[in-house]
Image 1 (cartoon, rainbow, N blue to C red):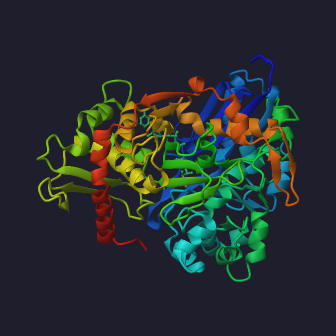
Image 2 (cartoon, helix red, strand yellow):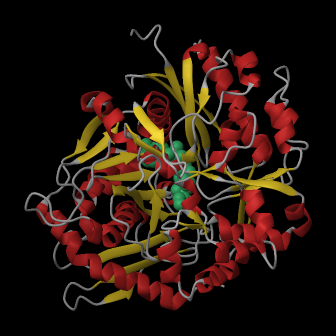
Length: 581
Ligand SMILES: Nc1ncnc2c1ncn2[C@@H]1O[C@H](COP(=O)(O)OP(=O)(O)O)[C@@H](O)[C@H]1O
Ligand SMILES: O=C(CO)[C@@H](O)[C@H](O)COP(=O)(O)O
């Protein structure tokens, strides 16, 4: 089938700072891309970096109307590129995780009767939502609720065993609990609660879409082993006697990540010329979608360098621990996604970049990169220099749960004693130190999950970089220095668009998968797996490029020797700052 006539698939990524879209063929060839950048295109919503912040309560929210406007804008941009919308057979995609959307009792009715002559925002933002904002994953307002969640099943370990994670500020269960207490009337008036992923799917479907089997694991409400809502946790979020009410608001969870949930809404058929047969495939979280951007093998890792930094692996082993997250895999029953997530990713690096002399070139990162690469590991030019370590947290961090601040430490070369730095550093030292610090944290927390490979010490096999920061060669080099990568560090060709690409691959598999049937429990079984379907069509040479050799024994060992000190620094900061209440 030529590129002029075959079926096409559309993937979205509704992340913190942008809505991105990508269109591919059945053979996985990328044909079109478009995006709306919230700060650049929709600043009238008063947002900065895609969100609104209420410092006093450590609340972070995003306007739902802005997302609606972004959907029309991105589709219009695709239309301007003469995209043949009628050939699109399936739409899927992803939403930033944990955010919740509060539909009013008019929501579904309004979704069903969208007028193609009017914009989405004009029609939906007035009455379809009980609340105009979605709590954002950067929110840190729910410590009290998190304490209650950690206690609810006896301990945070038990909560992690049941739901895949201990309690986190951003997770939707604690967020719903706080929302209900803060806005009791709005909560009562809420007919349905969706995640960002199911919200986006609902708009395309023209009715409220179910929550997805992988994204549901970011709520602290889903019992992963039982495959059902955890009633004690729902009851905690819902308050006394509110269990059934909350269950109804959340609705059913869709077990099958594939298939179509129904055709695209007539609004999109009339306004953009989609085919009335185009199927809407379940949307998932942005991290689960990212692991679908290539046929990931066990022991390969993805490092996503977006607004957040995440470290992702696909694994058949469910090994939950309060230190990290496990989710159901978005397409393949029996597989799980392992994740580490940090709030202080891209924006923290930007802050350090902006303290340096501005770049003379067009690339705003060139000074940062030159500085990071010309600084020796740990800022030690010789063995008699102190080693430098730092934590750079403009936002309250997730792991470790430390409040905002910059913490600089040195290690004496003679005594190996770690102490808070007494002298201020030259800003240049921070450029390398911030990237080292972010990657050392990944290494510290993932080392148990990567077993030795080809007689090399434990490290990921391949490391794939995705997200905005994957465009940066200096960061790629430092990832190789600190984390290794037995088969190198790679970057996806679509760079910042990997998550949307994962959504588009999901759509291809969901619509074209062969065989399979519905089992007695409603689950889809015996069909072609995502890994089989996409693995056969994926061409490494067209999709990824090696950006660093990865494992360099000497340097890797040097960073390995410092890991204990890095952990000690985190404990010291935690002790000194105390945990936020
Ligand atoms: N060349 C680059 N070097 C380092 N960071 C970059 C570069 N280009 C973009 N970024 C970072 O990428 C981030 C946005 O990444 P992206 O994956 O698009 O975010 P999100 O999906 O969270 O909206 C920005 O905050 C910016 O700091
Ligand atoms: O909170 C998490 C994952 O738990 C974040 O990773 C969000 O999912 C937002 O991601 P980006 O906007 O950085 O892609």
